[in-house]
Amino acid sequence: MIFSFDLLVNAIVSGILIGGFYAAVTSGVSLSFGILDIVNIAHPAFIILGSYVAYIANATFGIDPIIAAIIATPLFYVLGAVIYQVYYVAFEKRGQESLRGLAFFFGLLFITEVTLVLYFGVDYRYVDARYIGPTLHLGMIDVPLRILVPFLVSLLLIAVLQLILTRTFIGRAIMAVAQDQLALRLMAVDPVRIKRIAFGISIATASLAGAFLIIIQPVEPSVGREYIGRVFAICVLGGMGSLPGTVIAAMLLGIVESLTATFYGPSWAPAVSFGFLLLTLAVRPAGLLGR
Amino acid sequence: MRTPLFFLMWLGIAAVVFGLALSSGNDYVFFAGYVVLQYVVLSTAWNILGGYCGYVNFGSAAFFALGAYSTVAIYKFITENEFYRLPMPVLILIGGAVSGLVGFGMGYLTLRLRGAFFAIATLALAVVLQTLIVNWDFVGGSRGAYIVRPEEIAPIGPYIRYLFLCMLLLAVAAITIARLIEHSRLGYGFATIRDDELAAEAAGVPTLKLKLIATTISGALMGMAGAPFPYYIGYLQPASTFGLDYAVNSIAMPLIGGTTSWIGPLVGAILLGSLQQIATVTISSAVNLLIVGLLLVGFVIVAPNGIVGLVQTYLRRKPPEFVGRRHVETQSPETVP
Image (tube, each protein chain N blue to C red):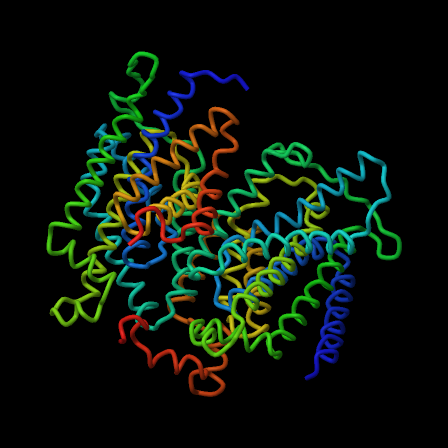
């Protein structure tokens, strides 16, 4: 193993940049799993769906993938709201969310993936944009723009989400629904409606995260699976539903993964997230910034 | 019915099945039947943890692959050192022991927390074990490993018939174990965990211990189902052995069949397994996976108690007992002060 200083610095910088992207990927799960207690393991599949929407818009109309994703967010919001409604009627209302609800989302994950395979095949797809290709050279640090742009937009997305959650009525109601549904009902707010909105927002973030993903790397339908362990590891480590915690945890994971990939080889990187998850569960189940 | 009698009855049925398969005179029956039986074992194993305790395991493929790769590791070791070749039942027991141990360790780390964490951890476990196997050159790494299957075995004839017979006996054993658990103190303990873990804990049920027993038995059975697989397939590769199809099938089959008794996974596995064998031949393998996904989602929404539940409702003209009780609590516990 050759140890060199600029390799280390570059690994850390790219870890932070990738971490920002991981934070955007996880923000949806922090909303659904962290705040609403809905174990949406199909979230990575929706992210891949987002990637393909960005890919189609980019390939047919030549729209920038991020702008395409922003345009697509209402569609994803509606999709999320519909899924929550089904989930609520079929599982939450009957009190069966633990076993059958999980199986439901697992089935959704599977259906989404297989449908994409049937429609697009298992070829890797990629998008075109002006910032894909060039690299910034800052001294000894190389920053590829294809990672920097998603990083910046990710941070923006999380800032907006955090503002919505803390400053608006709906956002506060979402935080409240996690704590005490009965109290919320006494305030004449329908908890089911609030949860539907929150779940819609959570799926809407998948549209953006999907666009970031396909900018950073070529995508094929089963790529999403790698993100399941990662996303939930970050969510748990970040403290279940705390967005600032999510950002910190995502960057930590990004750095550790990037260091592993640089010094031990990329084939070991997927194991890192699981180690993180197990360590968190064993040592500090409340996460870094737990409620 | 007492357990020994039940076991003998199923041995009899197994003998009839084997006799029928032999009389067909076509070895394809054994190839297709092996896969269906493998799913009977996998879904019965999943149901011991998932159906009886209510803990969802998404990592069935990982446990299955562990069993398969322990066989590969032993095979490589034997061929390199020209050691005495182990008989298949011993390989099955070793595969079961390895997977059972991993199941135990996994349960120990995650089961103290809420159920959802266990489910997520099992998903992640599959990814990590796959990473380990991909990086382990001794068992072939990402290139995969070849296993030379013996052509014949002494009294039975073609080797596939022997594999079929092993899997048939394993299926009988799995069903007997599942039924034995169901009618024992252990099974009642599992049911209390599924229905209300907090109340069970408060009533003095040793929930952690019971859950660990369940993960170990379930993991071991899955490993046993995987152990003969390298000899069946001839070429083992991480991406397909850890494939999502094993995970989704071993969840879909019990849920479609019905999770409360040993009959459910059996019915689900035979129906869905045969359906897939037919669909793979006649349509395509991607479409048949889509069918499984759609059936899974459809059944959990429309018929939460599976085919067995539907039949029971039809026979009694009233819903099974525990469904009625579930309907009463329309709100999740934390909303009711």
